[in-house]
Length: 269
Image 1 (cartoon, rainbow, N blue to C red):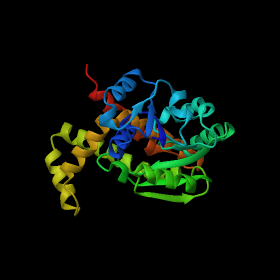
Image 2 (image 1 turned 135 degrees about the vertical axis):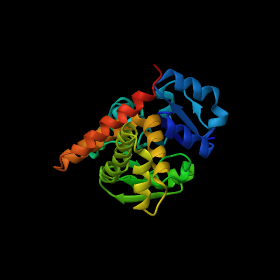
Image 3 (image 1 turned 45 degrees about the vertical axis):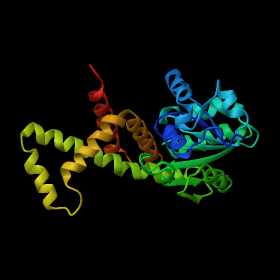
Image 4 (image 1 turned 90 degrees about the vertical axis):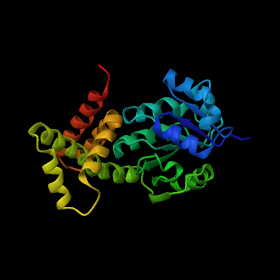
């Protein structure tokens, strides 16, 4: 069967998409972390992704590439792997980074003969899988749509012809989403320390019509504990986005610190 895509980075997003789509025989994966490469190889049939022996093998015949690495590696991945792309391959950059970072990655990909697509994943990939909302932008976004649909992605929308537009929507939204997580974490830590958590949560419930605040706080703290390192890196990119727009990222930088602290607290001693 002809290779439909390559997946660079096999973390939560890459593994979830591959498993949801059943891409075995249609996709090849590569991750620079040996433990992830071994995990994919051993569970290839289950995850729906064949692990390539090298990045060059994964990319050589792929008409579409999904870059799903960590935020701090997004530009490095584009620069390192662009020379290995098949001619006119579409590089769909699904990493949570600032528009300027996406534009720098686009220059690297297109200088090597590839076609760059700004891809913003707008919600957690679990449990949504291939139904997760995705925004695309850039001159080649429309060309990527049918290939992504063929892989099973079901909730795609092109938001403009400029690289950086999709990521701007994602980054600016993250200021609120991840910021609320960090605020709830700070609030409940202080409430617990003061011995007034029940009263504070009850007061918040009384002033809102939505989900009970105990559930909201527990969910937010779990997300930060599990994904705080990755989210801190994303919010550093959000801070870069705000600075480029002339907005001082005062609250956003605080979110970076609390997300990272939550991840550290989860690590075993």
